[in-house]
Length: 253
Image 1: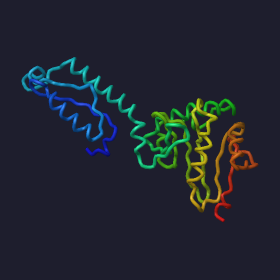
Image 2: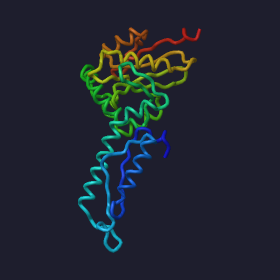
Image 3: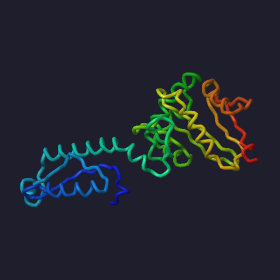
Image 4: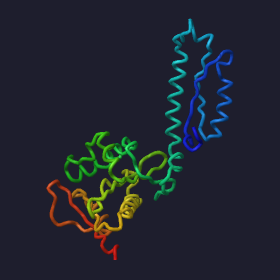
């Protein structure tokens, strides 16, 4: 293991031995892994061979089982707590629009957080548009994971929480945007506009226009897009959404 690969990751120890049950080796190993910028846990599992084995086999031991569960629980808690610190060292991480926030491209591994974000963000859209036929409300974890693998999706994070996202991809000479979402408690603070600008800036130079859609009754969303230079396409969509477009041809002159 290298320092870069283990940066700000927790590590636990299971040791075995005779008199000290391997605890002296653990103390030495903790000094080594700290140099590699790993974070050793306080919880350990120490097995004294003479007490723990019989006829060459390990005896059942409730105390050791409990210690192992405690070790794994602590490993999960500390890994989650250290995640924001690891994220900041990843290639492609940008400073976000809020103090302490950062942005990066989302991957299929982020599907659980994206699924939660979609559930909490599109409930309001369902109420306003009087429909629950909104894909973001019903997608399974696997479906979210699949589209994260094909769309270029940017997410804003703070303290391990996904605050907002937007996805984009090219189709012919069009740049398609979608799933612009911001957690309800942080709306009105510029996150949505920041995400929109970030997604627009990623469009290839030869793209001629940006396309996106939103609920036909989502007036707040429509007002945001109009203020950013988008025009509504007159023809209504049969699925109750309205499409908007932004011309990029002027950028090519």
